Length: 110
Image 1: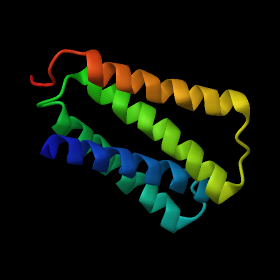
Image 2: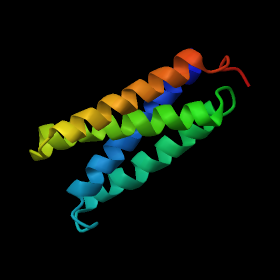
Image 3: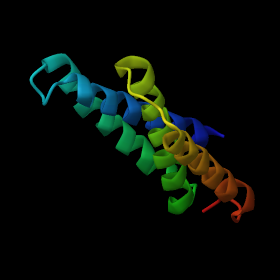
Image 4: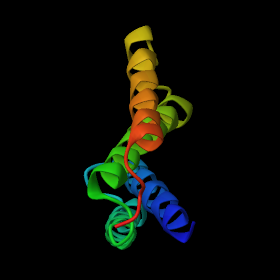
C-alpha cells in the first residue's frame, strides 16, 4: 500500500510543478520557478521508488493519466480554461484506460 501513496505523491508533485510552470511566466517569477524544479524533482524521485514494486507500464499509465486529468481540472479551475466535449471525452477515456490496466493486468508485484 505504501507504493501507491508514493505514486500519489509523485502525481501531486507533478501537477504542482506543471501548475507552477504556468505561474512562473517563462521562469521570470522566482517563487513558482523554484516550485517547478522542486515539484518535478520530487515527482521523478517518488516515481522511481514506485518502480521497485509496480511494473513500469502500470506506474506510467497511472502517473501520466492522472496527471493529465488533474492538470486539466486545475487549468479549468485556476486559469479559466474551457473544457469542451472532446476534452471531457478524452479524460474519460484516460480514466477508462487506467481502470482497464489496473483491473485486468497481471498482479502488481515485481
